[in-house]
Image (cartoon, rainbow, N blue to C red):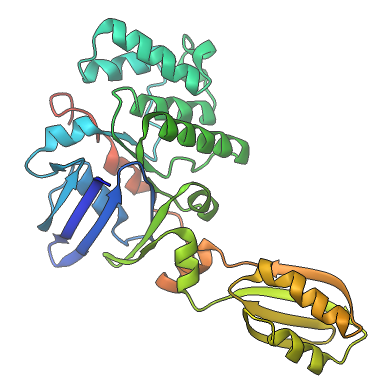
Length: 334
């Protein structure tokens, strides 16, 4: 499978501060790839290099086979960018927003009109295309900006915190749109997010970056399997000797450990959901009555904290301007 993004030993220094150190990663074409990391980890620097807004100190990066340093115009033609900040002009209509961006890419008038109508329909805004963006809700503006980023049929869509500030309903609508666009155009998507549920729901692969280095990269299930923490199953049981019950449950294939407290048996396993029926049956054969079962599965946030030592925090507000203009052809860009 061809690579949509490929970096080799990518390094970036700001004076004496090293923001990226020997970052090597490959994002296959058609992949939904998540990039996670705490503040100052290097996410923004990496994205700025991939969008040709910044040159690396050393190493190389290619987007759709194009070198970001030596072929910046070609790279920009291949990417669409949806920055964290809402950047759509409030004084334009939805259609005018789409039309202007299509002009940036030299799309002929008839094709602009058709493409704008197609995308506005897909994001549920066709009936509001003639209304000023100032009258749109936050969720509508975000859907418009996703459509805008796709107007020139890019091969790679880069999303920087696309659902931040949206209500849960609007967030799920955006997720569905992204999945639909990806399937329709075999689009490669690179996502940065602080919502762990978002990354777990959408991403095929996730990379965690910290102190300028990629510290983990795998599928979400692969990342979970790689950390020492296990799923935790709590079974509330009566009518049995708790010492013997804990020993019996611990002997079940797949159980890592088991202990008890009061009427609760705590079971640790890599396959918490799968082991529950057998654990319940084992306790019943001992004469026990299981009144409650609680499963706490490993989450992507558990993985994040394991590798970075701290939970997700919001990025500083000043970061949002870093991606403005990315994806616009150089003749129109800043």
